[in-house]
Image 1 (cartoon, one colour):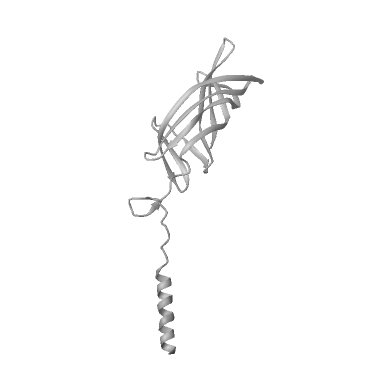
Image 2 (tube, one colour):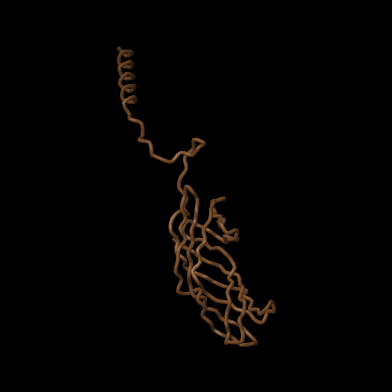
Length: 179
């Protein structure tokens, strides 16, 4: 009798265990190697939030005559990052609020910077975004996260100071974009 109740108990246990439904699978994209992959955090629309110019040099015909530093104001534009294909398009227009140091004097100057559009490819390497513009220019990414990217470039403009001086202005620029 004991063996009959043991067999009956095992039969009930096996039938209960076999009636459990398998978990519902979660749909993910499958890469070419059979593994799953998620979309990049960098995909989306980013807004320009900060522009800082530093180490500026003012020159006339290659002769350095002063320096400058500044920030961007009235910033308009965005960076759109897409996936498949991995492309970016950036549009930027702003006013450069500069402080010029010329002949020992500090001169404030607002310089409108014309709208610039740049596009290219992007990749993600070790969690960091890498930008490769179509025009061959270099964009160095200083830091990047899912909601903030800081990259550097070169600011180049002509600056008129009165009617006698037209300076070539060149500086480093750090640009911040955020989601």
